[in-house]
Amino acid sequence: MNKEQKFFLKKLLETHGPSGFENANAENWRKRTKKYADKIYGDYHGNSFAVLNEKGSPKVMIAGHIDEIGYMVNHIDDNGYIFFSTIGGIDPHIMPGQRVIIHNGKGNIPGIMGRKPIHVIKPDERKNISQITSMWIDIGARDKKETLKYVCVGDSITVDEGTVDMLNDNIVARGLDDRAGAFIVSEVIRILKEDIKTFNASVCGVATVQEEVGLRGAITSSYSVNPDIGFAVDVTFATDHPEMDKKLMGEVSLGKGAVVYKGANINPKLFDLIIKTAKKKKIPYQIRGAARATGTDANVIQLSRGGVATSLISIPNRYMHTPVEMCNLKDIENVAKLIAYTIKEIKSAKHFIL
Figure 1 (cartoon, rainbow, N blue to C red):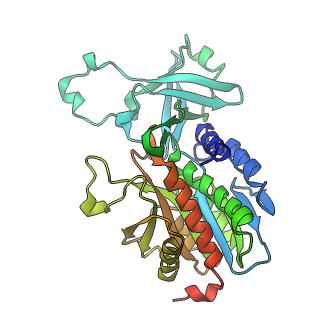
Figure 2 (figure 1 turned 30 degrees about the horizontal axis):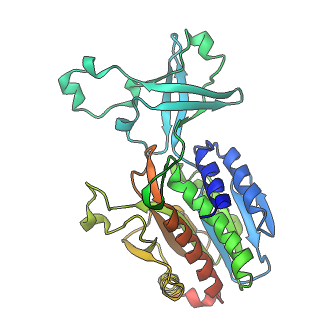
Figure 3 (figure 1 turned 120 degrees about the vertical axis):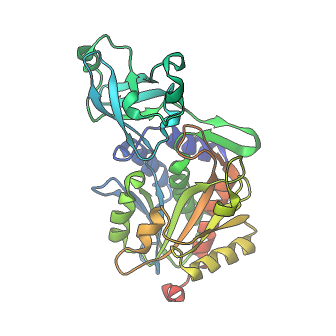
């Protein structure tokens, strides 16, 4: 990954944007991607679109969601402490002691996630799952009046964590689910424009919104794009660390390539083409089975209008939905290459009719 690519990825990762608050990162994505797209635009929902070869056929859509999990201000008590709800699924066990940033029009307000100290938690309470109702955010204010100078109900909150480069081309950050996918969509547009140059398909890359609260951006964008073929790009659970059951979740490792899904949510002919392309271009890949609908944008893309020939290609991710998600940079690059070169091989939508 060159300096420009890594800078763009880190910018996506370090810009706040929980579901419903993606605007700043949508701007980042559009600014970079417009250098390679023939046309770029947004919609009422906040989705971002980049189009190549608009008059081509068939129509291919690539989707990676640009939102992240986070929190929202729900209530401010008389002492100035902030109570919150979650945006997306977050394990309450990891919340206490986190540094957070509250985002509003008045700037970024630092805070900490508080709860009573371990010393005064009764032994039987320690065995229970933490509840968000027993936690709060402290910005150091004296009282409610002072807090209200800086914070409003409905403000979004993200964990105050940046990116860290690790050994073996691994990277750690919050929001790799699925800023890595949104990055890949932009990269596919770049590869098609700069490296591949000629291909039959009309391609629309989409940075979708609100995936973490119900795949909502993919629903509206796939309806409006109306593709014949769809690629969803997301992260998936790596099983190469302790406490992961490979008998249930398969073998998925960081650094061993793109994870290509197979199952009910996936068009089998498109799956075959992806694997054929991976072998032809010597792109490393792993296979994971999905016996039913996936919890990704692929689910709703497949079901849009009269149906779409859909695939799901994912990046292995350790510690998903925590502030320290880990992915491998080479895996991210290989997913982008695999999608781009598969699109080059697509000649007709009829090939994917079952």
